[in-house]
Length: 236
Image (cartoon, rainbow, N blue to C red; front, top):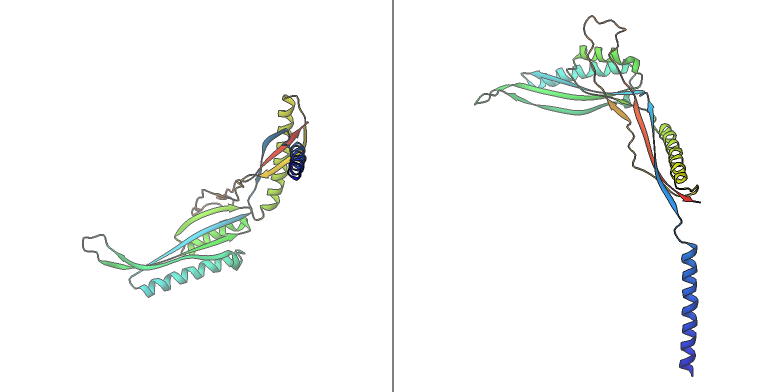
């Protein structure tokens, strides 16, 4: 008797549980959605310039080579400060010292070389021409790189992100309409990989002797800030 009652109660409990599970599945079933990707780009004129200068000194004596190099580096730093470059925007990124030998079968000591690399970030681009010319006169004999940057890209990212969301919505509307549907509330929103370019390398020419001051050699172009979003909308 007790065994039969137990089986009956177990059957009732199983039935109630099964009905609850089915009901829960119906409530949380994945809705009909349409998923799209929105892309937006904003072209921004860069407002910072990063210059990487190299100073190489060659002497028969290592101490003289180091002193010669230090003297030219001091002149470069003075020129940078005069151009308004803040101390925090000046960095010595490399220093090498060593002997130089000939390429003969039995190498001969030719002397010593000391090299330093200094990176400057210029926030006033109108100072570029004078800074470049004066740096070369002070003893800079290598320009290892010039890049343009946007100082505060965050506000442009936000603008691009909003445009990307609008682009995704418009795309979803068009696609849904072609299927005889309309879009409802967003189901899921994710941001894609950040591909925005915060800097842009440049080709440059060193000012020639006798060149008119108004003949600028700086051409920064534009930096592209990109945003990608993926949005899923419910279909109605």
